[in-house]
Image (cartoon, rainbow, N blue to C red; front, top):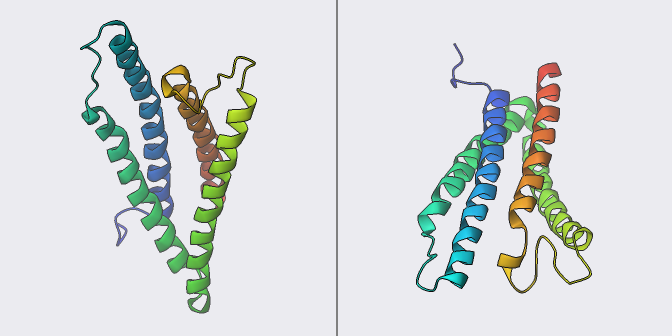
Length: 159
């Protein structure tokens, strides 16, 4: 067997899969939240959604982050020559920061592309209940699936 249980590539793949599941769950929780918000508008005193509904998605994201980050850092540390380990780790954190910028860009693009003449869009500025945040979560889920398939192809041919 393996000294560490599972390989770095398996660990990262598990992280990808769990992260995708967490984002999918977030979309369904958003639908539930919006349903409760609409109930509160039509029937005062009803429609309170507990914060506990958020625990599964955040718990899954936490587990996914553990698999992904640890897998990536171990992979870079193990596969890079000793003289390049700190550089490889720095490249990991650089990729994380670039991903954050790309996420911000994606929010901006979705905000503009989904804008309608009446001022509504998926990510409204004033009232989240008028938006379609669940669609955004599902868009992210779709992008994660594509990224996961690409990762699987790369991992399969990695030597």
